[in-house]
Length: 330
Image (cartoon, rainbow, N blue to C red; front, side, top):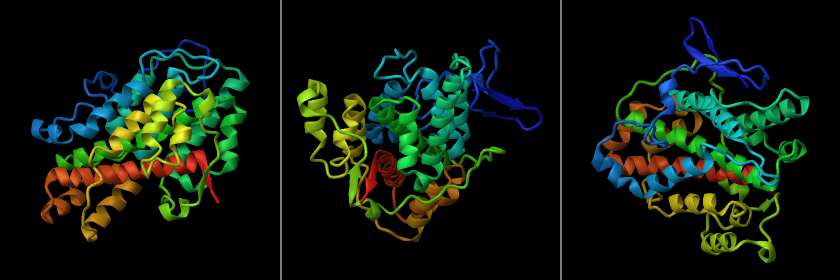
């Protein structure tokens, strides 16, 4: 997979191709790889605001380290390389169109060695990329055939759980970054050639008769860490159906659950300003701006309340994508 800068357009894109030649391709903003805060990407925010959001920011930052370690030991059961992970993250960031996030993942991906140029490797990467783009932008097209496609290119159950969590998480990250940028009044930016008109997520009521399409952890074969994670989250209503599958990777499930119980799901009134803000953020985070954020605070909500409301809506989108990705509705 290559990242290219198009002369005169000031942007890059990446293709689902690999090359055995050691060509050096520089990202548009190489310094974007070096951030102290891997989740918020060094957005300058008041300390009081960060402190008020700390309960859910802490597990979100921990997930960045779990999903994107600097080095990844590939094994028979966990075959996703660092390149696979950052390539998937960049694909989702491009779908969301949040430039700060695209720059970050492009800068991290650029120096990594890609897969070999065999047909099998190219097919595997193409399948992962297509799946990530579809789940991020058009989750309503994900079906049993799309799910089977990951299995056919050699992804294991552990890989499938991780790749779906990465897709959901980066979409969540993009929306949170967009919210904080809107709070600060940053102008929105259009990335030429990258915007994919998103489809609406299915209504959560359509997923009520949901059944897992991926086998959950067998208690008799589970590790102590998996069992502990399952016991902790299986009674949490929003995670209950997902927990047996997600606890294949218990550290990831634990941090996902910590975001859920952090207090962001506070009760709020559903008025027109809230509806418009939530809808804009869900459909086009790249176009979310102060025009959608300010009406919430004008309506009497504090900045922290508005942030938590919008963060919760983004988190629900992440969970809905997980339901679509690893299950089926009866």
